[in-house]
Length: 116
Image 1 (cartoon, rainbow, N blue to C red):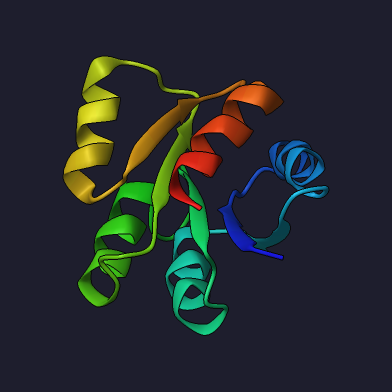
Image 2 (image 1 turned 120 degrees about the vertical axis):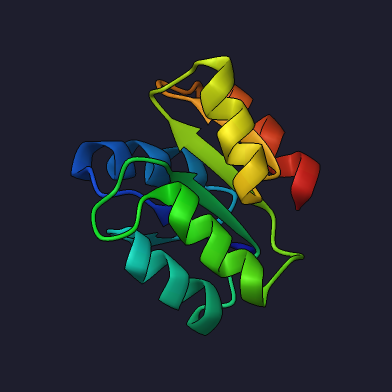
């Protein structure tokens, strides 16, 4: 089963994402940007769902750090901020795609399927 790293500091948001993913993928959780960077290397996920507002390193900082070591892993920004500038910032940091919260399970799975 493909492993998806869910970088999400909010418990209820992570619970929703794990519920959406559990029948199709193996979700693993990073609670902050620093954990996301470390787990991207140690857990060998097939894809990362990256919250942009997290403690220690925000999602943009974490994405840039991951990209320094791994340019191939798909990273999808997942954020409540849905402005065009947020999307542009995410892509500039190295995200492959962008999902706005709240995300529908169908939309989430469709975007993930494009990359896995």
